[in-house]
Amino acid sequence: MAGETEKITINLVFVDLGQIDLLVQEGFYSNRTDFIRTAIRNQLATHAETVKQTVARRTLVLGLQHSTRRDLEAVRAARQKLQIQVLGFVRIADDVSPELALATIDSLVVLGALRASAEVKAALADRIH
Image (cartoon, rainbow, N blue to C red; front, side, top):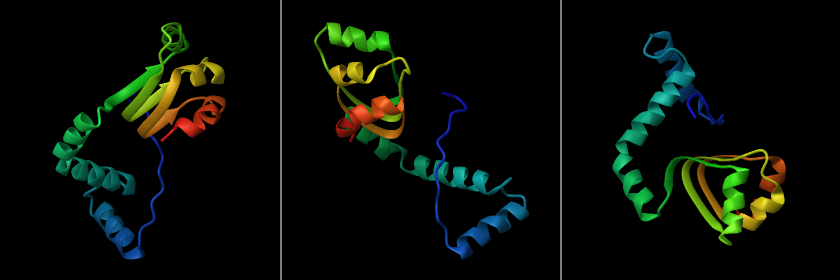
């Protein structure tokens, strides 16, 4: 997962943006993105214990969960269904059909990013929370 990022858009008032630009010009940060990433990391560090406790309480997988066609075929063969709950990144392999996803994934909670084919996302739309 190293190097993979999710692009987000934020709106800032002009004064805040100007202050960020000033700090960049003064050499505290290499660019606006560097400032924003640093600010986000600092806030996450401030709230790290809360995140840790919530992950444990909600039984979330922390990090990456990758589901391959073989994984889901094994789930189907065992006549089971998955309740996927992840804080981080969920990847459903490109060779997973919408039918296989529907047969094996009962619910999907992703706090972060989900990568799957458009067809699989559409098939699971009512199961994604």
